[in-house]
Length: 83
Image (tube, rainbow, N blue to C red; front, side, top):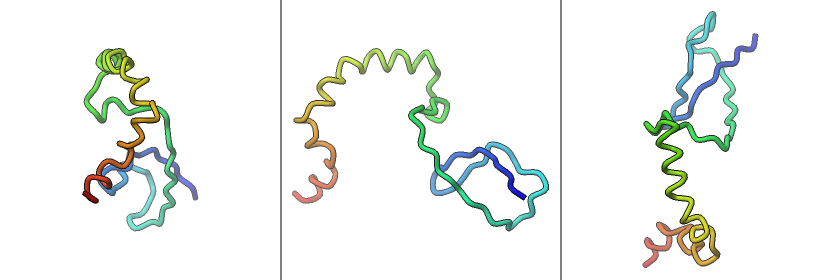
């Protein structure tokens, strides 16, 4: 029997969106991680209107963030640690 239930990986655990029916405790599972380009706004306590304001406000920085010179910050923590 296969049962599919959506969930979220958070703090090293899988949080299921709903409880499975007729699945015994201790049943083996296979977890497949699905990468999405969508951001779960609710998990960040942001509503769609606030997200639109943030997007509009931050768009002006996109050219700077995406410039080759900014790649120095890609591994900032590692570089800082090696000082």
